[in-house]
Image (tube, rainbow, N blue to C red; front, side, top):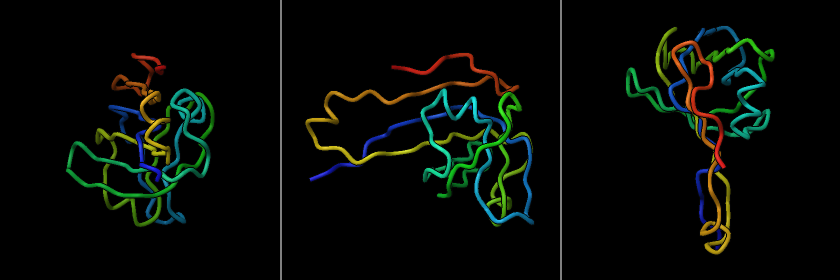
Length: 120
């Protein structure tokens, strides 16, 4: 049996935009995606600490170095520029694999710069 385990987390990201007239997803700076081990088009859970909203979507790459976090499509109604969000992805593992696994987590400052680099 597989259990779902936190694989990756970006903590304290700030939304830089919301575009209702786009096909949907969360665009993220590809450098930050790499640092958190989140792949382009990977399923993600987005938690908005500012308003309490939660949504599932997928990650799309934004230009490297842009520090972008852009909610698109209907998801754009779940946040506003400046909202603090956490992005998580999960992976299926056996209990044995999960007992040895450590998620990759990064923490960002208010300008979406990494202040605590990825672990492990």
